[in-house]
Image (tube, rainbow, N blue to C red; front, side, top):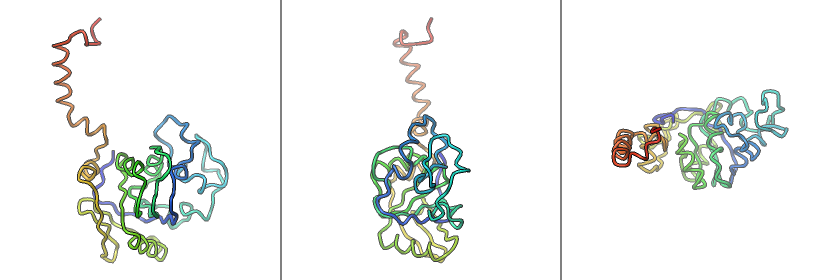
Length: 215
């Protein structure tokens, strides 16, 4: 998992409440058994004018010019600004996969669905909670200034605007540690690989019939 320390990026304003995971990545894409290739289908039903299917060449599909991801000023964005209850609905992990594979590194919203929020942390995305009034101010500035950017400093737990204004956010020490070091659940387990190997070796000595390598 990619570590998150300090990130600067263009803000994408998704001015909608209660964006559910079926909007983030529609249900037909859950048929894919791969964990890659979902970025082109992020917000598929809002982004395109036709019905998308897994494995489809999206470069030839008709796009919705009014949707924020299709507007030139936001095409290089990597910070998604949203309204309350982002990521509600089903608990599909495909939603953070799609966000990450599109290039989203951080989310800013007043609230998130709990399971979605946990899935974001596990996939290297930082979901930041700010107050409604702080989110309102960021929406206003994003709409007002072309190429509006923010700097997010995870170590200091700050969202920093170009004029020096900053907003603090909370994150649990464990989640912060994992993101700063790029540890997902597998990475955390591998930190103890020496102890795991030692335990397995001792177990085989005590119970050799468990050794699957025996003929």
